Image (cartoon, rainbow, N blue to C red; front, side):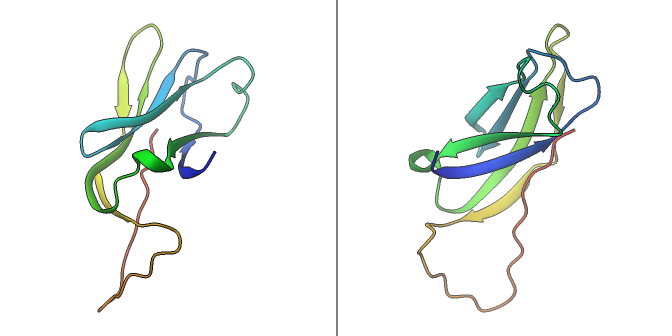
Length: 104
Protein backbone atom coordinates (compact mmCIF):
# COMPACT_ATOMS: atom_id res chain seq x y z
CA UNK A 1 0.00 0.00 0.00
CA UNK A 2 1.33 3.42 -0.92
CA UNK A 3 1.57 5.96 1.89
CA UNK A 4 3.52 6.72 5.04
CA UNK A 5 4.54 3.57 6.92
CA UNK A 6 5.30 3.61 10.64
CA UNK A 7 7.10 0.85 12.49
CA UNK A 8 6.27 -0.18 16.04
CA UNK A 9 8.93 -2.16 17.88
CA UNK A 10 7.59 -5.16 19.77
CA UNK A 11 6.34 -4.15 23.23
CA UNK A 12 6.37 -6.07 26.53
CA UNK A 13 3.47 -8.38 27.36
CA UNK A 14 2.12 -8.26 23.82
CA UNK A 15 -1.22 -10.01 23.24
CA UNK A 16 -3.48 -10.89 20.35
CA UNK A 17 -5.99 -8.04 20.14
CA UNK A 18 -3.61 -5.23 21.19
CA UNK A 19 -4.23 -2.25 18.92
CA UNK A 20 -1.49 0.05 17.61
CA UNK A 21 -2.23 3.38 15.94
CA UNK A 22 -0.69 6.58 14.60
CA UNK A 23 -1.92 10.05 15.49
CA UNK A 24 -1.14 13.22 13.54
CA UNK A 25 -2.45 16.59 14.77
CA UNK A 26 -4.68 14.79 17.28
CA UNK A 27 -6.37 12.55 14.69
CA UNK A 28 -6.01 8.77 14.33
CA UNK A 29 -4.81 8.30 10.76
CA UNK A 30 -4.17 4.56 10.81
CA UNK A 31 -4.40 1.60 13.16
CA UNK A 32 -4.01 -2.15 13.15
CA UNK A 33 -4.27 -5.05 15.55
CA UNK A 34 -2.00 -7.84 16.73
CA UNK A 35 -3.24 -11.17 15.39
CA UNK A 36 -2.24 -14.76 16.01
CA UNK A 37 -0.48 -14.63 12.62
CA UNK A 38 1.78 -11.67 13.47
CA UNK A 39 2.14 -12.23 17.25
CA UNK A 40 5.69 -13.59 16.86
CA UNK A 41 6.95 -10.61 14.83
CA UNK A 42 9.59 -8.24 16.25
CA UNK A 43 8.11 -5.21 14.45
CA UNK A 44 4.61 -4.12 13.51
CA UNK A 45 3.83 -1.90 10.54
CA UNK A 46 0.93 0.46 9.96
CA UNK A 47 0.55 2.55 6.81
CA UNK A 48 -1.27 5.85 6.58
CA UNK A 49 -2.79 5.95 3.07
CA UNK A 50 -1.15 8.61 0.94
CA UNK A 51 -4.35 10.63 0.54
CA UNK A 52 -4.67 10.93 4.36
CA UNK A 53 -1.11 12.17 5.03
CA UNK A 54 -1.09 15.90 5.80
CA UNK A 55 1.69 17.75 3.97
CA UNK A 56 4.12 20.22 5.52
CA UNK A 57 4.91 20.58 9.20
CA UNK A 58 2.62 18.45 11.35
CA UNK A 59 2.57 18.67 15.15
CA UNK A 60 1.44 16.16 17.73
CA UNK A 61 2.59 13.04 15.86
CA UNK A 62 2.84 9.94 18.03
CA UNK A 63 2.23 6.23 18.23
CA UNK A 64 -0.06 4.54 20.72
CA UNK A 65 -0.65 0.96 21.82
CA UNK A 66 -3.91 -0.02 23.51
CA UNK A 67 -3.73 -3.26 25.49
CA UNK A 68 -6.55 -5.74 25.04
CA UNK A 69 -8.38 -6.49 28.26
CA UNK A 70 -7.03 -3.73 30.50
CA UNK A 71 -7.39 -0.97 27.89
CA UNK A 72 -4.08 0.47 29.16
CA UNK A 73 -2.56 2.99 26.74
CA UNK A 74 1.16 3.38 26.03
CA UNK A 75 2.22 6.33 23.90
CA UNK A 76 5.41 7.65 22.40
CA UNK A 77 6.49 11.24 22.95
CA UNK A 78 4.70 13.62 20.57
CA UNK A 79 6.89 14.96 17.79
CA UNK A 80 6.69 17.53 15.03
CA UNK A 81 7.46 16.11 11.59
CA UNK A 82 7.71 17.40 8.04
CA UNK A 83 5.98 15.43 5.27
CA UNK A 84 6.08 16.02 1.53
CA UNK A 85 5.31 14.29 -1.74
CA UNK A 86 8.16 11.94 -2.77
CA UNK A 87 9.08 14.03 -5.83
CA UNK A 88 8.61 17.43 -4.16
CA UNK A 89 11.77 19.53 -3.79
CA UNK A 90 11.90 21.58 -0.60
CA UNK A 91 14.43 24.45 -0.43
CA UNK A 92 16.32 24.39 2.85
CA UNK A 93 18.31 27.16 4.47
CA UNK A 94 19.76 24.96 7.20
CA UNK A 95 19.90 21.42 8.50
CA UNK A 96 16.62 19.54 8.76
CA UNK A 97 15.95 16.92 11.40
CA UNK A 98 13.03 14.57 10.86
CA UNK A 99 11.97 11.99 13.41
CA UNK A 100 9.45 9.21 13.61
CA UNK A 101 7.63 8.11 16.71
CA UNK A 102 8.52 4.99 18.60
CA UNK A 103 6.05 3.37 20.93
CA UNK A 104 6.66 0.85 23.67
